[in-house]
Length: 620
Image (tube, rainbow, N blue to C red):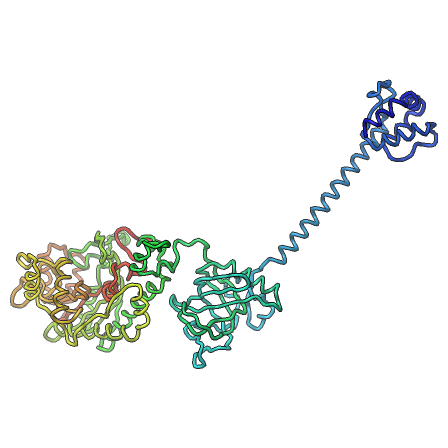
C-alpha cells in the first residue's frame, strides 16, 4: 500500500510541491486529520486525494521526497495538534483496557461469590433456617447457648427400641474418621469416644442441584480427624465397618468446628493395628507402616485416639475407681499428702531435688512417712492416689521416673496378714469388676493387644521366702546366700511355677531379707535377717511392695543409722510422731501403671501412662 502511494507521490511530485509551497499549512493538515482541506486551499483533485490517503498513513515528510527542509517543517500549532491526537488515542486505549479489566474482575468476583463457602456463626437453633447448611463454624467463643441437643453415637440404632431410632433428627459432634466422595455421593464415618463410629451420607439433590453441589464441594474440603457438628435424620442401613451397624445418618447440615491439618504425623487407623497385623502385611503389595514408640509418644494425643490406646486410659481410670470403692467399703478414708518434702522418704531410691526458698527440698518418692503419721493421727485406715517421683536412670520397659501410686496404710491388731487380706479383697474387686463393668473396653484393647483375664484365688495366695528360694533353685537359678533381691528373670520364673502349681496369676511373697527393705520395715520376730515385708505380683512381675511398719521410735532410729541415712528435719518429725503413741500398722504401695500394664499384658509400661516420664523424656 505504501509503495503504491509512493509511486503516486512521485508521479504527482511537481504538483504536490507547488501545493505545499502555495498552501503549506492547509495542505499539511490533510496529513494530520481525516477532515477535508480548508476551502482556501487550491489543490487539484488528484493532489487532494493523495493528501487524504496520506492522512491515513504514517506521516512521510517532504524530506523523504527531497523537498526543501523549510517546506516540510511543522508549526507549533501542528505539533500541538498532533500531540493532542496521540494523547487522545492513548487515553482511549487506556480507557478500553481499564473497562476490559473491570469486566474481567467483576466476572471473577461473581464466580468467586457463587462458589465461596462462608463461615457460619450458629447462635440459636430457632434461627437455623437462616444459616447456610454447610461451612466451617466460626470459632466457638461462648457467644450463646444454641439450644441444640447433641446425642451420643452409641445411643443411635436401627431398631425401634433404640434411644434414637430411624426417623429421628439428631445433632452429633464427632471426629471425622474417614470420608469418601464420588460424583454426587458422599460417605463419612464419624467417631466418638474413640471407638463409637457411625456412617453419615449425602447425595446430590436433583430438586436443588446448586446447593447440593456446594455441599459436596464443602465435604471435599474436610480433613480426617477434624471435629464436626452434623445434623441429620437416622435411617436404617447395613454398615459392617462401623460400631453402629444397623443405622446411618442422612446429612441435613454439617459444620467443621475444628479443622485438623491435612498432613498428620501418622494416621489413627495405622496406630490402631496390632503388631501381628502389621507384621503379616510386610510381605504384601501394601505393607502397613510400623509406628515407632518415640513417634507415638511425641504425638501422644494422636496415639491415644486409637481405640485400644484410648480404652487403656479408661481402664486406668477404672482401676482407680475400683480401688476407691473397695477401700471405702472396708472403712478407709482418702488423704492427700505433701509432694514437696524436706528429705528422702525411702533409702536407696534416687530423688529429684529443687530449691525451696533457699533450702533444698525433694519431690516425694512415696507418701510413706505421711501415711504412717496419719495412723498416729488416729486416722486408722487411709489411702491415697497420687504422683510418685523416682530419679532412677532405669531405661527398661517397666520403669518410669514419675508414676501414680495407689497407697494404703492401716492399723493392725496382731499380724500383717490382716493387711494382706484387705489388699487381696481389694484386688479381687478390681479384677472381677473390670471384666464385667468394663467388658467393652477390654474387648477393644484385646483386639490390638492380646491378653487373657487375670487368674486369681478366692483366698490370698501367699508364698514365704524359703519356698520361693526352693522353687527358683529347682528352676536352675543360683540363689547364693538367699539374701539378695530377685531379678526380673527370677520373678518371671517364679510366676510361671506359681501359675502352674496354684492356678493363679496374682500372688504374694513375704519374709523378704531385711537388708533389701527400707528402714521403716518391721523385722521378723524370730530371725532379724528377714522382715515382715511382702511384694505382690501379676503374671510374674511385681506390682506392689509393703510391710508391717516399724512403729517403735528407738527401733526406727536404729534402722536409719544402720542404713547410713542422715536424720534430717523430715525424719525427725516422722520419728517424733511415734513418741506420742501410735497403733501398730502395715500398708502397701501399688504402682497404678504397673497394674494396668501387666493386667492387660502390654509389652511396655509407657502404653499404660498417659504422658510417660522416663530418663529420656520430659515432654509432652
